[in-house]
Length: 161
Picture 1 (cartoon, one colour):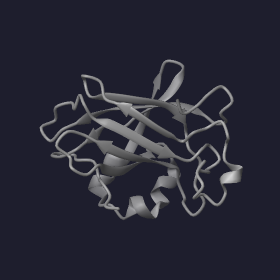
Picture 2 (picture 1 turned 90 degrees about the horizontal axis):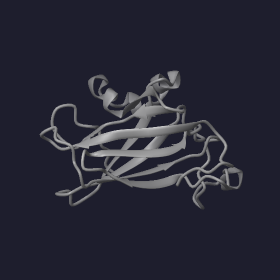
Picture 3 (picture 1 turned 90 degrees about the vertical axis):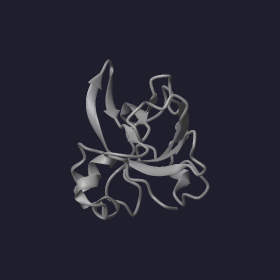
Picture 4 (picture 1 turned 60 degrees about the horizontal axis):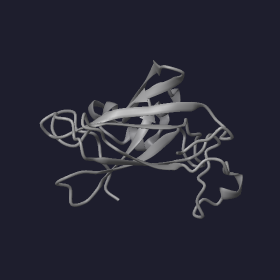
């Protein structure tokens, strides 16, 4: 559980499906997220502004995919981290046949500031959409859909660390 009733910020549902190289859902993947709180701070000793972080927000979560390859997180929309220009969520994906986990980022399609983000702009324009979560209403929460394609057509952009 990333949030509780005391967590500050706009609550969102982050959901999607993990697909393999043939476009089939991956039923046994694990999606891990690490993100800043609504104020742009990480509740982690490596963040020099940790004392300003929301004590009611973990910022870290893991979700196993279902039989249909779906995952979801109830979290808050992150704020902009110092030194960056747009909010994002860090993602790691673990799945069968992968000896090393895949690392990517989720940016929000409805954030105008994404057009000024140097990391996002360094990616070929034709591939940027693979890093954008699109907003849709889902029940009582705004939902951002982010599908992860491990290989093949429209493969998600992954980063080397």
